[in-house]
Length: 204
Image 1 (cartoon, rainbow, N blue to C red):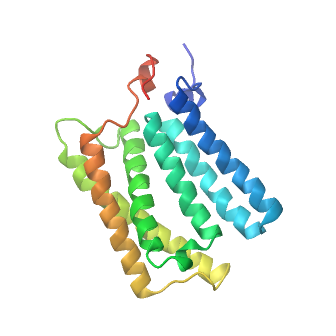
Image 2: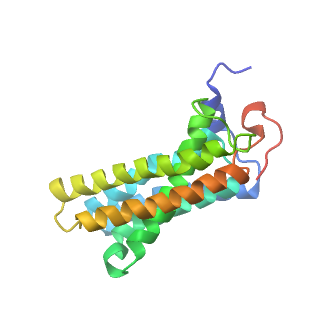
């Protein structure tokens, strides 16, 4: 029996299905994107994409089902590439859409990480109201951090980053909506792999 922490065992576990290989392929695309940006785009673009890489590793530590792993990583990368490709300013409502969707999946992953750490109850138990309440709360906290990062970027990196009172409130409201959806997802959809602790056959 290994002396390594359970989270490390989950991270080092080899993919057991095509879907799990697909999730790792999305992570590999994230790494390739940083290299592409470093060579053909700008150092700032490469830095923005690099910031997403640690986030892409979280699903492996948590031990989520492969389909949600793919969805989570794809949305995080889409949010990062949207910045690089300037989609937030080119498409009128894209900012709100990404704040809703990306904040929602991050809230789900954060709750699942807390559940693994036994800070909160695991979802799908008898007390479904826990994720229903905590999902929006986590999402609003994530939204606040996101807005702080945007302000730091505007203040110290580039004045092209748009920040403003209405923009901030709108983004946080969209994140709150994503948090409500996150709570519903956590309460009724199984997201953690059953084998993540026991090492039994995997579930995609």
